Each structure stands twice: as structure tokens, then as C-alpha cells.
Image (cartoon, rainbow, N blue to C red; front, side, top):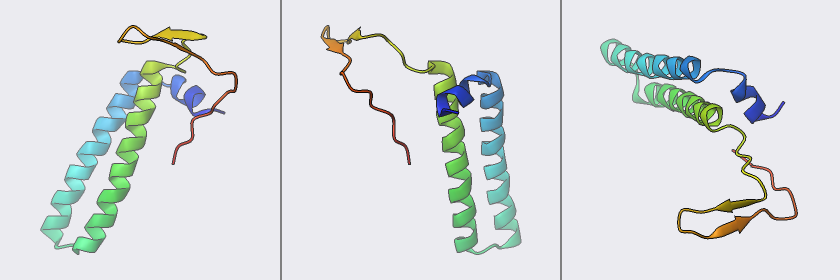
Length: 95
């Protein structure tokens, strides 16, 4: 299954709600870590994991709202130029 197909099976409101939940959890985790005196190293790793999850959900939301990006063989750009699709298919590579 493609990433786009997976994202399009969910609705934007559902993804936005999950995104807000992840942000709230990150804030709560930071507050709890401060109260419990967690080490900076531990909190840093926890924050990084949370930020990566938030980024993934944000990109999922983008793909859901934007769709597969299929605009046809030619597209008129904002500056009036026409861009044409190349002969070879180029997939998107993400990290």
C-alpha cells in the first residue's frame, strides 16, 4: 500500500485530532519530567520521539488534504510558466 493510499483512507479531522493529542502528550511529558527530575538525556530522547511522531502525523494530514498530487501532463505555475511531466515516472523518496 502506498503512503498516499493509507493517508487518504483517514479523514483530516481524525488526523488533526491525533496531532493535537500528540502535542498535548508532549507538553504533559515535559511537565512530568520536570516535576520528577528526569535526566536531560532521557527527556531529550523522549522529545525527539514525540517530535518525529508529530511530524509523521503532520505529513499524513498534508497527504490527506492534498491527495495524490496528480495534476495531469502539464501544469501552469504561479508565474505563468507551463511545466510538463517528464517521460519517466519519479517516485517520492522519504527518510
